[in-house]
Image (cartoon, rainbow, N blue to C red; front, side, top):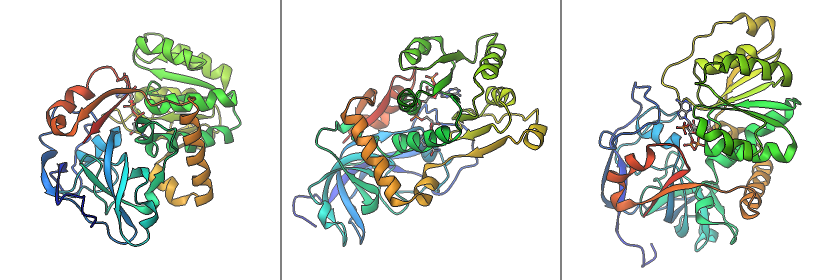
Length: 347
Ligand SMILES: NC(=O)c1ccc[n+]([C@@H]2O[C@H](COP(=O)([O-])OP(=O)(O)OC[C@H]3O[C@@H](n4cnc5c(N)ncnc54)[C@H](OP(=O)(O)O)[C@@H]3O)[C@@H](O)[C@H]2O)c1
């Protein structure tokens, strides 16, 4: 190990192994049941791995599902949390030497060590050297949301419809998708649950923005869907509102569930539509997309993502950057309230 790397570091560590049986969703009041903040040894990179001195660790809803044991992969007690971040590679195992000294965006896979720490361990293949003109705040978010935005929007393009529906439309992810839709001239039909978000989404190019809590929501949505005939609904909420929208969609409509922000599952009231109208309900998970997508296509997507951020067409909104040393106490309040951007941890 290079001499300037300390033996120990501070980290927010997972308290539990495996999965929980809860379905609480990503809301967090306290970290106490899930994490502890303490000093541990700095991990050592094995073959195909790199050690990264973390500059910023990102916090996505998937991290919050994960620490609660509600995500698609098991927890490992005693290992730092945090799936993605940005930092500088300071040490490497066999195969990662060329990355030493480089600023990278990284994603932490199952055998790694998470981003909510002074140092993280990532696979060489889950690190992207960053362009110099990219902000750390954008670099810290490169994997999860931008790749998902590109991958799901490709499906929208393939649908050949002039519009699509997106729920939880004020999310950071949907703001990226809105940018792609504007570029292609495809109209987003955006669903939110607060009036305050409507004007902003319209300014990003959303043709229609509907508040799902308004009394005439179902009627308004049905009319827009009849006029615009969207074939894809990108859905991060997966509640009864989504089911109402899906029912109103035309033949061959695809309900693509990629998040489960709602804590209660919807009831399917028109199951015959799957048979007679060729409609489908499916899931999207970036992890599977990465596994199944040719490397060349992924490299092209990453290059496009960096260009969009560097060119200013995309920007990561930040609502708070919390120091690692106070994150255990301060994160819950930083994550609460109206969503205005990403919360990140600075070691
Ligand atoms: N499947 C995948 O591979 C994949 C990859 C990336 C992201 N995702 C998912 O994408 C979603 C968005 O991620 P993000 O990082 O962009 O999130 P984000 O910026 O934190 O935004 C979350 C948004 O969801 C809204 N929301 C939360 N709970 C809701 C509920 N019960 N009903 C309606 N709206 C709700 C919030 O609205 P308010 O402002 O009203 O609170 C906010 O606008 C998450 O579900 C995440 O897990 C999935």
